[in-house]
Length: 352
Image (cartoon, rainbow, N blue to C red; front, top):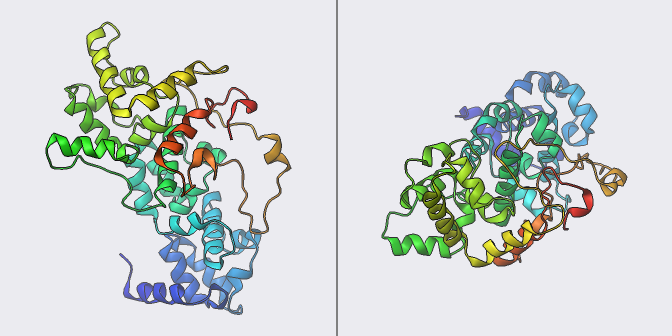
């Protein structure tokens, strides 16, 4: 909870142009961002400075003067300042700014990547950082080591963008109603919004309650199942630790998985398997940070230092962020490119 003084300053920075901020307003803003550890350095720096010194400072000066101790803290401040000053050309950056650190930690639970929570807390991860998270940052600073977890975060970000970073995007529980309403929930395109817990509830609904706990921390949520071309019923069975000799049980899971996702999506997954260069995804596949493409090597940083590498979920990836695309278009686009940004077999296998 914020103190009354911080809440007063919160209102001040919300209503005052960042170019006019004084020292106290800036310190209140840092506390609201969850970066209160840097308030003493900010006071020492800004006390004798003119208004707007924070907005005028280049990223290197911010890092030096605030004595920033984590690379993502610097990026968090740079993104937040870019959002406040506008002209960044990314409407979703502003929408993502509504989601704070506490929300981001809960979201990691929702997508089933609980193992990254401690590192995310150290990084002060929030909605803007998720939106602009790079592969290098995910691997080095959130310490994600498995491809499945990286894909879980990628598809989770895609779902957030498709829902304009609505804080209520994730569906955590089944509706308290009859089966017909539950089926309506699936048919309405809300499967992509299912949290990991909701997927586990579904497993109980299809008489696989014994195996549902095995999905904890596996990174399986509705968006991953629906949008990732390499996520199959066979992979789900392996994650659930259903023995290979229990063929009837595996067949039952496959049928219910196919029913849940729908004929078109399943056909697209099958088509993807036939594509040259297809690499099956397993629970133990290691996360390899993709090498920079020729385009990204030539690309220059913007003056705001926002272009910091290849994003986990590219801004125009698979129609995510395209607010005019229908759910069907998004699913088809998502399965069109066999190689995900995680562990691509080669650059030309990507579909953009």
